[in-house]
Image 1 (tube, rainbow, N blue to C red):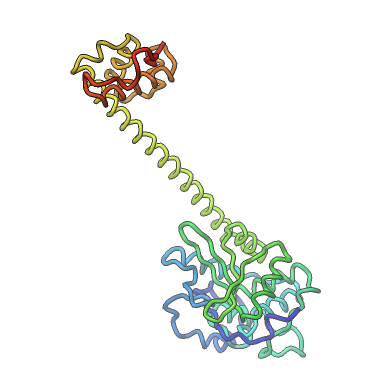
Image 2: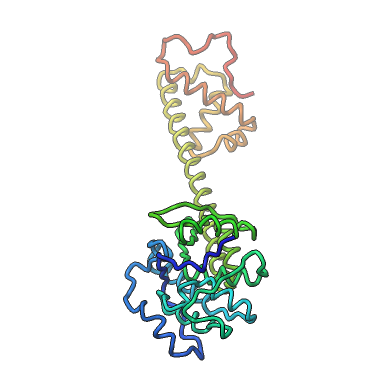
Length: 327
């Protein structure tokens, strides 16, 4: 399988401001980060999209996640090499943010045969899981972006077009399948599942920021459930108010032309109960009258049908029919 990191990227990434300078970072970080001296007004990710896709607190939170990942210090030499390989050309003087430049300096070449100006090759197939996670962490910091919207979470990698399928295959092999597409000539590997984004961030070493991200997801879910419940209750209340208004109007019509007095006592009892309790539900009216809810419903439906026909007109059903009153 070809290497994603050995080919220089034509699409320079960018991320938000990183954490405070790591203790002991050499002064060479300044020269590596020189290309990031120009302010990035858009806080753009590798694909030119907003880093985080949102403004204000969301953007700051995304920058905090990236800063936390950049501050992870690999304890194994193999993991340091793997993470540097994931950084690709960002580790050879082409970093577009101070946080990635400082990370590249901290990682440093681990042997005399490795040059600080040469991207490190990485063999995914033979690498251990901890090295794979280190490589993915470096790749995300160099070519990834994270967007946190009000209703969605979106993480993507922007790579060479030919490398998108390779990266998607590697992610699928660790249980994190991703979608691939081309955007303006660039290969984009994307997750739009909050669970998969969280699993990825957990795997590459996110800690407190991941807990906050998951807490935000829970709060968002609760808000959505509460809004749906409130909307359903509001719709039910609106229907109940409309039905009560129609029933009261129908009762007034029948009482005005004397037809209500001609109905069975059970129907008249329901009419009196509705007038006395305009806001009551059918179940509450049934409880007050000690009848079934269906009996109350049939009586009110009859009242509304009769009100639609003027006095003296043909009845909506024959006199021999059951008048569907309670009891």
